[in-house]
Structures are given as structure tokens and as C-alpha cells.
Length: 434
Image (cartoon, rainbow, N blue to C red; front, side, top):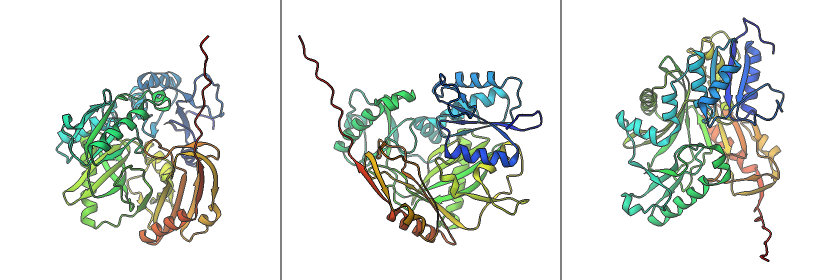
């Protein structure tokens, strides 16, 4: 798409270019917008995917933002969006330097650190479990730290519930801490250069049901786009997510309380503009904010959302809604479609080599199932939780009622079969001393 002086241009920061960015690209073409992708691919490769993306390093966000500002000097930039957690800091610095509406880097930093987020919520008077940061080396002794059970161990900055574990005893705590330390010291995690990989967050376990909320901020005003129920209990020992269904089956009073807690959480964090995604626990003591992220819902889950806006008969996707919001086009009157919808993030049953996938055609023919996207590749190594963070794929369904959607997702998932073989240990040659 050729850039002109009158054509809007939006920068999209993303860790990888794939299904979600293609959806943005399609929406941009429909709206006549030029997208410029900013990604953390290798800078030594000269546009290997022919998408003209700007290569940066998200682990050094200020340097990444400077590189983007230099590349966009003298060019029109109407807005900035970040997909996923890692690019959010670089996007915030770039937006600040380019003079476009966005969230302050300090607010984004609070969203990126589970410890800092707990501190912000506590200081704002929001309900939080007891928590403390714990060094992983030397091995922590829970009795000296005043740890109570059950508790939850978390890395400070990873996402998608990677490394999150429940401990019900001292034995489980010590095993979980050792396992988390091993994960954070792995080459894959070390390569991300995330901060605080030598510490973990330990907090009290919160019982109750969990929901996810998708929202959109405009100059500090929060518009709740959807509340997703999570019908599978997230009780541990690991916390990989599975089913999201909307609209919520909670009563009106509960939904109002969740929305108010969401507003209080984003206000406490100082978030003012753009997409926000929140996770909450609800029990007899009230609504507890678990996490708030300054980005849209992850993976392919956005496909479960369609919206109606005033001047269009056809519904639009979340990607188009966000692009319209960046440009200041009408988005406040957007309402989620009337049909119930949902997504199942296909969990990894065991770590190993993915050798076969069966039942795909059968799953697609289940009544209510609208789409199935297998994202895992055959013959690749896949990791189950808590070490893992990527799903096997995404299954989508629609229906008149949320119960129908949930049933379709469960039936469709039941048709799928995955052959996973253990990865053989690598044998290292023995060096003989002479």
C-alpha cells in the first residue's frame, strides 16, 4: 500500500507477525490505512518476509522507540498499537516521542511487573491477596518467609500463565520454586532478557470463579466490550486457560461489580487510552483484580468478538474496531453482536514432539463450531504448562446461548486427538583425557 499525505498511518508493535497481524492488515485495507509493523526479528536479515517491518529489540524499549522515531521522521503517524505484552513498553515510548495518544511508560511498566501491579492495587485500596517477592537463589525457605498455604508462585514478568504454580505445602513450594528457577534460567527465557528473572512473586491463592474482560479506553473513560466466563475451574496446580465464552452468565449485579473493579484497576494503574484486557477472580469476599494488560486479548481469541456499529449492517472484528478507535472514528457506540460466542485455547496435554493430529474434520462438523485453527506445527517440540506458553490451536463456536457455545467447544475438542512423543535426551560425546 503506497503512502500518501492524506492516508492515515498506524504503527503496530508485535513480537511476531502472524494470524493476528494479518487480521489487522485486512482491516486496514478496508479502512484505507497504511500499517507499519514494528517487530523484534533479527536486524541482520533484510526484510525476509517482504513485509517492510521495522526490526527492533523490545528488551531495550527506549532504544527500540528511538529507532522507530528515526525511521518515521518526517512521516505521518496517526497512532500506535501494541499486540502482546513484550512490545508494550517500546510502543509507549515511541508514542510519547511521536506525540500520539497512548499510555505513559510508567503505567505500562506497572502492567508488565506482577509485583509492581500488586503494589499499585494495594496502595489504591483494591483487594489483593498477601504477596511478597522472593529470590530464587539461594533456595528459599518458606517457613522463614512466613509463607501460608495454599499459595501461588509466579514469575514477575512472563505472560500466558507460564511458570505459574500452586503450592499446598512446603514440599510443593520447594519443588515449584526449583522448577520455576530452572525455567527462568533456560536459554529460551534468558534470550528474552526480561527483567527480574532471578525472583518470583508468591501470593495467597484466591478461590472462586474467574472471568476475563475486554475493554477500550478513550481519554480515561473505559468502555467494556465483553465479559468472558471461564467455565473450566482454574484451581491449579497449573493455570493454562481453555474456554472463554461471552456473554457472561453472571447476574447483572456481579457483572456491574466486575466492571467497577476493572475501572478502579485501570485508574489505579494510570491507563488512559487504548485497548485493555483484565483478569478477575470472584468469590464471597468480592471481585479481585488479578491482572490488567494494556493490549487487546491475545492469540487468535479476538476472532470470538464481533461488533455492530451504527453506520454498518455487517459486524466488524476487534481489529477493525481498534483501528477505528486510533483514528478517532466512532467506536463508542460499538456493541457486541447478539449471538453468544466463544473460543477454546487447545491445551497441550504433555510436553514432547507433536507427531500427529487427528479428528480435525470431525471437530469442524460439530454443530455450533465455526472455525478451527491448528497453530502448532507437526514435528515441533511443544511444552505443556507450566513451562509452556503456546497452545496447539484455537476452536471457535457460536450459538443463541452461552451454554450452547460451551457445549459445542467441549464436543469439538473431544473429537481432536494429538500424538505427542517424548523428546529423546541429547547425548553429548565424551571427551577422553590424554
